[in-house]
Amino acid sequence: MKLYKEWNSIKLRFIVMLLLMVGAAVAIVSLRNFTINLLNSPQMRGYLKNTPYKGFSMILKKISSDFSYYSFSQWFGKNYPQLAALVAVILSFSIFSKEKEKRTFYVVFGRMNRWEIYSSKMLIGYLSLVTIMFSGSFGYLLTALVFNYHLSFFMTISWTVMATVGAALLYQIGAYTSLLFKDQIKPFLLDILIYAGLYISGIFKPTKFLDIFNYMAKGNVLRGNGIDVLTTIVICSICLAIFVGEYFQFKYMDL
Image 1 (tube, rainbow, N blue to C red):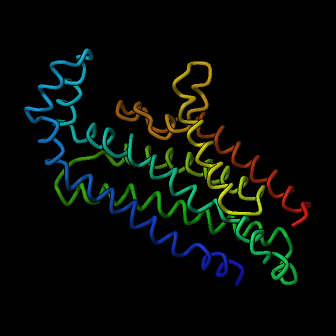
Image 2: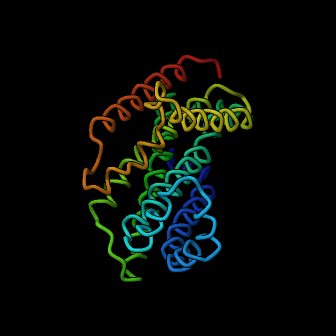
Image 3: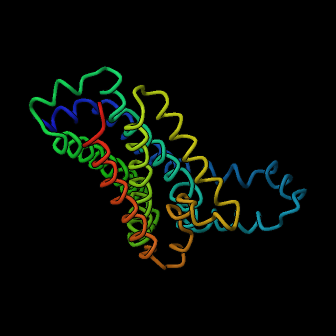
């Protein structure tokens, strides 16, 4: 009953985000020829002649000839991690704030202790997140197979694991901000600001290590390097630290 209640509270959001993720993956594979024709159109080539950066022509050639590079540039290195951030914020922003806003925590305190409440909420959220992330990546891979495009399974699983781990950190941050407020709008807006800050941090060399999106969309995978193990361990450790700290705050705070 504990897990069913939590599942019921996010079921609609889960279904919508799952359909969005899989639909986007299928569309990007299906529209490959259209995208390539658009990029190679006379208008685009005319624009490239006037641009100071001469590497665009080489990039367009790689996108057109190499499906792995196309997959990175259009999905795993771009839309997939962006959608992952959207999934994380949609699943997390109301996880605690909704209960606090509606004053419904007291209803469940008589049947569950705080660890049971906290763990059931977080478990359902994490399971939903992982399901959506893997559905998006394998939906992309299966669609590629249908269209007879070759994409390495090793590359796919490497991008999937890193994007999912990064999304888990964003989700954990979102769950924590949800615990801080008694309404649902403030954690949502704060999450957007935090995610934007993490993304912008990648522009500056001293803060580049904070750019979680760069980790989620590692270009090194194209060279066969696979998962960035050290960074993955660090991010998982940070997730665990926030998880534990958030639980103790939830355990002793006045709800």
